[in-house]
Image (cartoon, rainbow, N blue to C red; front, side):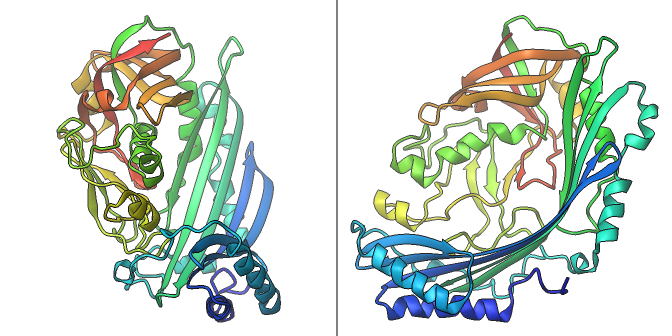
Length: 450
């Protein structure tokens, strides 16, 4: 592989610029061009052996065309100028056949990013990626297996499926406001799903993963073993009596209870009046213990980015502060429709402020005393208009701050506003490999049924 095969070339960038100018020459009022390129190498593992290998290089060019008060989006993975010019002519003609929408348009130029010229500003690209070859990837994958040492476990490991992957993503946005913004990052990931069997032949499965944007911070050791231990911990589950229990959710799954809030703060849900947080801006809706920030400009951190898909500059900002809703996520279009100030299109790197001065999940269990520890969600749904939810969960009964036994086929129900007003405390154990840094959470008196 050419050392720079995975990054956008000068020629590809020249073609993107040509597409922008060509659209304008055909009478488009405004244009945005987004050029993406990605490369992924994957090594699949099954029971201690390499099961599959893949190498995938992908690139695409997207056009957002604003012409005659109309708007359309188009994409192509062919980057030959003659073909693209024919494609663009048809695209512009198609836009002119659409219904007018005067609210469509590029962001105000003053809001667009000015400091993302190389793509490397956030330190998310690791040059060590260029030194990896197929043998290094194979060795890294095989060395992560626990299968050859499965006799150490004390229970039957039925299967161990893993995937090691490394990837690079390079993206450039150009628009007729003279924007040129670039974002480049690498990623190294490893995940394992392990299945174990108890003495009666019942099987249980669990998953664990690790990831980092830099090779030196990538810690795959113990990943496969942890997946097996999480599966074994589910052996001999018992039912629970229906009723109210304190709810504890580990940091691996805690973002499940935050994601619906972020969706409800999004422009699409708000504008369609399909959000349980409509009309709550600058109001205290949740517990004063609850603070969320978007921190997209954190150096070398998962989820960081200097601009959104419109090219609008990001900035660290509160989303919910001491229970008060501080931000809606409104791109240019939805802001115009709602006659509100635009922000950014979506959250980038979400961080929740820990509550209670506790470090670990064990300390959180001791603080709570009794309850249900949830370590996985199994189906269910939430209503975006009301905030009501019903989720199947798996986990453990907790008594006196200690795990008593696994729980099976439990259902947790409620509404998100009510739930987040019952927040007791958190640990300080958010996983840095996630873009949503939510620690283990504890809530009081939540409804469970068997």
